[in-house]
Every structure is written in structure tokens, then in C-alpha cells.
Length: 256
Image (cartoon, rainbow, N blue to C red; front, side):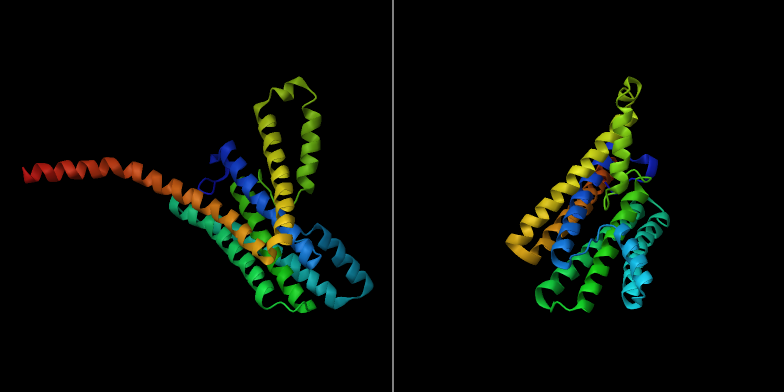
């Protein structure tokens, strides 16, 4: 899911990445609405709030919302910066994995703070919402960058627009027979349903286990990292086997 970049990615790579990260994004967004009454998987609404607060002259609130938007932007910047500076396949995997690791750390921080320190003050809420927006920026930047913008999982506005266009295209036989159109439709549907499933799961989990829901979200993201780590380990073992075999034969010959 994380090893390959841009046009080297297969449809299967994007489906797996899109489904798992959309599931986690749905969970994050719903739990942030439940706990903080704020959306954190996108910043569309925050731009409207920023304009409203500026119009009202509420400068403190405007600055807070501006910082939230900036944190989402910084998350995107960080992911793409790491990706474009990776050099080889192993370094590329690590560059793709680090944003996910940072996202996990951010979400675990929010969960731990809520569990042990949160006293429901405005300042605490502002910091925790900002942290979650940074985490979602990391994820959005990662998925969009490595998939050449084919996978965007933290917001569904553009996705719903694209689906409407694709559904209209499928009313014509020539597009129904176009493999690229069919694959894009399947990918977007997978992201949409995974996002919804994540949101529903998050709501159910939160009302049963509370802030431990953040642990489950982190586990989903950990699967994304470990899947490719396992694949890399297997690939290295396969390529090393002929070398190991030659070394054993050589040593046997020397001993004889």
C-alpha cells in the first residue's frame, strides 16, 4: 500500500490504501464531532467559519480557526515533503510510513489527554482539535501524493462530485466498457463506503469504550504500515535466497 508511488501503483494498491485510510478518517471525524462538536477530517467548513468570525470582528476566534487550517496545511506539506525527498525503495517506504506514524502519535496523544487530563476548557479543545486536523492533513497529503491524487480519503465533497460525473458517464456503453472508468468508480465507492463504515464504527465504539476508540483507530493505521513492512521483508528474503544459496555452495566447495 505504501511502497509504490504515483503511476507505479496498481488498482489493488489504491483500493487497499483508500479503504483503510478512509475507514480511519471516518472514525476520526465522527469521534471529533461527538467529543468536540467540530469536524476534523476536512477544512471546508472552517473556511466559512473563518470568514464569519472576521466579519463579526471576533479576532481571537478567527486566529484560532486560521491556525486550525494552517495545521491541516502543514500536515499535507509534511507528508509530501517526506515523499518527494525519498531516494530508493526502502527510503521511499519509510518516507511514506513516517506520516502515518506521526498521525498515530497525534491521535494517541489526543486519546490519552482526553482520558487522563482533559478538563473541558476551551483552550484544551482548541489544541486537541488542531492536533486532529494536523493528523488528517498528514493522511490526506500522504494518500493524495503517493496515488497521484487518485486517493483522497479525509473528505467526500470532491469524491461525491466525481461519483456523480462517473455515474452519468456509465449511462453510455462506451464508458461502461472503459476499464479506467469502471476502476475509478469502484475505488471511489470503496472509499465512500469505508468512510461511512468508519464513522458508524467510531460512534458505536465511543459509546461503549469511550476514549479507547483512539486505540482502535491507531490499530487500523498500524495495519497500513505493517502490511508493507511484511511485503518488503518477504521481497528481500526472495531476492537474497539465490545469493545465500551461492554462498553455501561456495563454502561447501572450499571445505571439500
